[in-house]
Length: 476
View 1 (tube, rainbow, N blue to C red):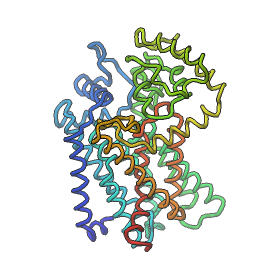
View 2: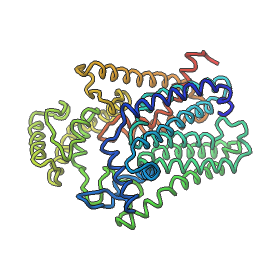
View 3: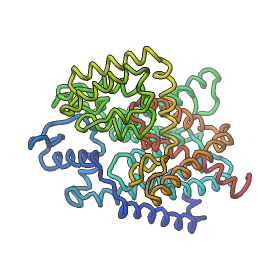
View 4: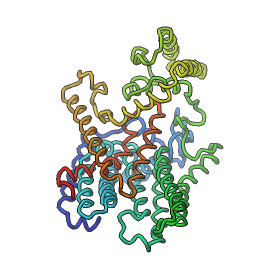
C-alpha cells in the first residue's frame, strides 16, 4: 500500500483533503450529541472524577453495566486531555479515526485483488468511495460508538486477510509474523466488542471462516505451509485469546462490584436493578418493520406518551385486538411506566399474535427489518423528516433524504456485481459470511436502525470498488 501511496500521491492527498473537508462540514454544521452520547459522557466523567464506572441518578453515582466500557474509556481519554465534556475534541479525534479507516479499506481492496493493475485501481476506487461516503462522515461527527466500531471492524478484517496470506507474495515463510497478525486481529475484535456487544458477530465470522479452512485442510491435505492444519489451528487459538483478553477486566469488575457474571452487556442495556421489558419487546417484534416506528413508539417507552394511532395496520390482526392494544396503551400512558404486570399483558398479546401468524414473526418481518436497515435513506442524524415518503418535508431536507437514499442504493448497486466479479478470489468468503451473519442477526432486533448496517460498509465499499474501477477503466 505504501508503494501505491507514493505512486499516486496526488490522488490520495486530494481525496484525503476532500474527506477531511466533508467530515469537518458535519462536525461544525451538524455535530451529533444525542442522549446516548450524554450517557456515555456521564459514565466517563464519573470514572475520571470519582473512580466509579457508573451513572448519576438523583444526585448519586450508581455502578452500571448497561454500557460496555470501550466508548466511555475513549471519552475519558479525550476529556482528560482536552477538558471535561469537550465533545468537539471527541468528534475531531473520531474524524482522524475515520480517515485511517478509508486507508484501511483501500488496503483491503488492494490485497483482495491479486492482479497488480486491477488491485491498484480497486484500491483507489475504494479510497474514493470511503472518503466521500456521507454516511461514514455523518457518524464521524456524532458522539456514538459507530466510527470506532467501523475502524476496528476494518482493522480486524485487514489483519485477518494478512494472516491468511491474501495478497502476500512471501506467504510461505512468515509463520511467526502471521501468529502476531492473528493475535492483533483478536485484540482488534476485542476492542470492537468492548464498544458494542454485536462486535462479536465479526468474531463469529472470522472464527467460522478459519474453522472452514481448518476442516478443508484436513480433508484435502492443503500443501501451502501457511494453510496447514496446525497453522490454521494456531491462528484460531491466537484469535480467540486476543478477542477474550480485553473482556476479562470488565467481567471481573462486574463480578466484584455487581456480583453478576456479565462479560458483555445485558441484551436490553438495562442495569441490574432495572427490569427488562421482555413482554413489550416481544410484542413490538410482532409488527415492527421500519425505523419510523422505532422513533415514534419504541424509543418512547418508558417515559413518554405513545399513541395507538401511530401503529401501522399490521399491528392488529382483528378489531378486538386493536381495542385490547388501545387499552394497554391507555394504561401505560397513565404514568408512562411499564410495570411488570403491564409487561406481562404485552407478552400475552405477543403470544396471541405469534400463534396467529408464526411465519410473519419468524420469517417475513425479520426479512423486512433487514431490508429496511439496508435500504432506508441514512438521514436519522439530520433534521430531515423520517417520513420522507410523504413528501411534506421542507424542500431542502426532502432533497437531502432523496439524495442520501440514492447514494445508499448506488453503493449497494455497485457492490452486488463487484461481489459477483470477485467471488473466486481467496478471502471473499470471509466478507460474505460476515455480511450474512450480521444481516441475519439484525433481523432478530426489534429496533431496525439503519446505523446497525454501517459496520458492513467497509465490505460494501470493497465490493463496490471492483465495479467502480471497471466502470472508469474497463477490465484489466
